[in-house]
Image 1 (cartoon, rainbow, N blue to C red):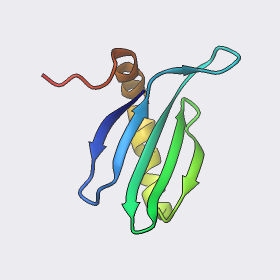
Image 2 (tube, one colour; image 1 turned 135 degrees about the vertical axis):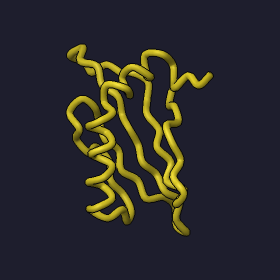
Image 3 (cartoon, rainbow, N blue to C red; image 1 turned 180 degrees about the vertical axis):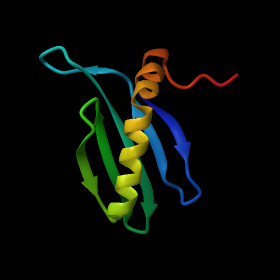
Length: 91
């Protein structure tokens, strides 16, 4: 399952996964940034809590990726909270 976080004016969509478990039992989630292009998507996917990029395709600049990493690092606790709650609950 994935949950929408935000959609930016340039059409970049940010989504995060439900909590998953590795074979060793460690929990993780993935946060994906995708922007439509004429030929598909620019994509970068971070895995939390390591903050590693596990997928990168397309033409996001290094500056954009650095900004995405900052979002992921600052919001990691919220992504985990919202994943446990089944997405962002807006009243």
